[in-house]
Amino acid sequence: MPSLELAYGRQRVNADLPARNYLGTLAPRPAPTLDDPAAATAAALRAPIAAPPLAALARPGMRVTVMVNDITRVVRTDAFLPAVLDELNRAGVPDADVTLLMANGTHRGHTPEELRFILGAGVLARAGRILDHDARDEANTEYVGTTSRGTPVRYSRVALAADLLLLTGEINYHVAAGYSGGPKSLFPGAAAFSSVEANHRFMTHPGAAPGHLDDNPLYLDIVEASRLFPKPIFVVNVLLDGAQNFVRVLAGDHVQAHRAGCRLVDALFGVPCARLADFAIAGCGGYPRDINLYQAQKALTNAALAVRTGGALILVAECSDGHGSDAFVDFARANPDIYAARARVEANFRLGHHKVYLFSRALTRCRGYLLSALPPDLVRACYLEPVPDLQGAIDHLLADLGPAAQGYVVPEAYVTVPQPAKEGP
Image 1 (cartoon, rainbow, N blue to C red):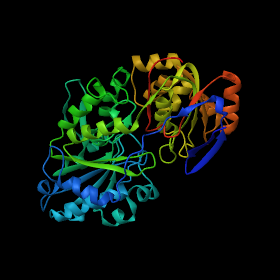
Image 2: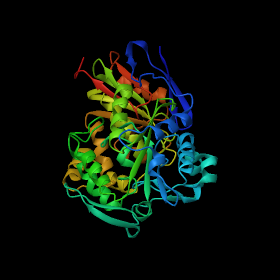
Image 3: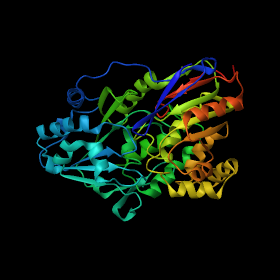
């Protein structure tokens, strides 16, 4: 009888699954990790992809803004950003001339404790300014143009005031943009709410899915929006394994270096599975990936790719910060039929409501159960069945599906994209 252990916030939960019901574990492939992420970062900055070295772009007197991913992303910024600041210093740009702009997109701002978690005490002591981007404060954004797909692009005035913009982040699968990292740190990271909403309407296109780029209108629109930015852009992106160890650091052109990283993501996190299962037991990978239900949806959608139509899925996500979006929950409460809710989003796209559409990708094909710290009535309003403990959820699921049911365990579903061979056994 396999013993399961899944991350739950900053803790872990355990349960047993009968061997006859265990189909296998879907997890990222092992990869060699970097012994010295700071040294790897310095090397990437000096030998970038399709761009001059950072020290050749930065000059004394320049104002440099560094986009930093927010608390909902696992990036380990504290481990590599000091090397970026050191390289800027080497080029004659002192820390006082560097602004760190949190690439919140439409997410909330940060507490002091969260900034310390993201940046580390060393960076906090060095940075000239640390600011949260607020997408809803459109007065502090400026229009720079419209994409060929009709997205009006407005960027933070803080970002636009820079002489050089650095984008930092992690590259992994993204549920709609194909992959995280690259140009996403700028758009939606530093974009106005209206711009993000206009772009995200492409989410309902079939190509807006993990691992898709060239057939993905949402991603292509992001790239075009990023090219409207009027100042030089340089990217520093990292790849982490499932245990958050550094695998690679890439730097250079914000599109081409990112694409190189995407190919590595496919090799690590695109996981073949022999067939679709009757069920899956999935974890996000703990805090901060399961910080709220809004973010935990990504693990749900990924894990559901390994489940047959009519199957079931148990998601383990603490959601210590709650649901993550009033607009999402209010729309879900007002639209208890997920099929009708999906149709309403497709007919009249709104940010916040779109999260219901993403939930529907999984929950119109399989039933969903959630182990979390959320109130049961809130979980039910979001189309999931609350469960008080993992073992009880597994026992209930097997009683419902039958003794012959077989399923996968997906411990890092936030970053794992199953690639099934076919529907059914």
